[in-house]
Image (cartoon, rainbow, N blue to C red):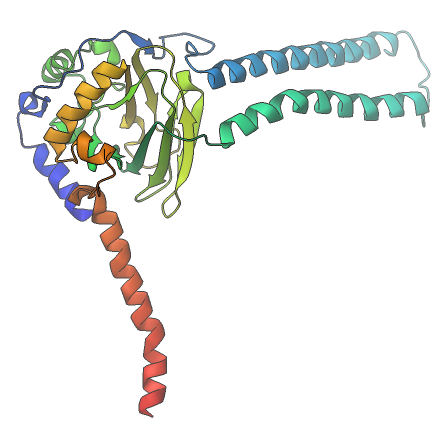
Length: 333
């Protein structure tokens, strides 16, 4: 992991234009999943899961509104009917069995009703289907790393304008040039990254999520997915995007001083464009050619992707030596 951070630091010495990806075949795509200034509500849903979540939110909002209006009405009725002006002498109440039964049973019925719709959505989220594309994403302070294990390559994704790309997290003329060179405008500042996760439209994509240092959280609101990236644990989420375009997300777990500068970019493209990009990425990042991977050949993980595993192996070996040391000393005695 130290080597990864050292390489990222060296990249800050390069001019901004050198950070552009030469030959990347992904062309201009419509920006669909992005926050709007002063907007309320959800981003456009482009997965079945996102639509289900947004519908569930609307249904629960209606129930909450009805309950709120009912309770406020009861409070208002009590204020008017039992005010000091209307009744000089206070009344004493102890029990009211019908009301007590009602306020016990009605909330149970409401919760069962909500659960009947929310549990299927929860199971849809958590039951991971067989993947067409598998991608491993790792959260770092403060950028994301992506690995395509089926094709043996990985790359890192930095916010355009961050120190990793030669900026200082401010919108400057140089950052505007980098945004334009990447196909964005200054409206996408703090959202756009120098590289992006690329997936084919209509494919079942399984994302394995973990963290390298502290807890992060990977999310794309338009997909209806969010998963904490916990160091030492590998979690999964899945989605099936139905529309080509660019979708943005941001780290959703406080992870340090630069938490606000850790965006996520996903580009959904056609199957043909994805295969063309895959060939380019394999050549760019030193992966395994698709012909070999499709034939079941061994996929060697790139050095950058195996740094954490190597560090973990060293820690494991040290722990083993520590555990074996007392036994060795007993034998000597």
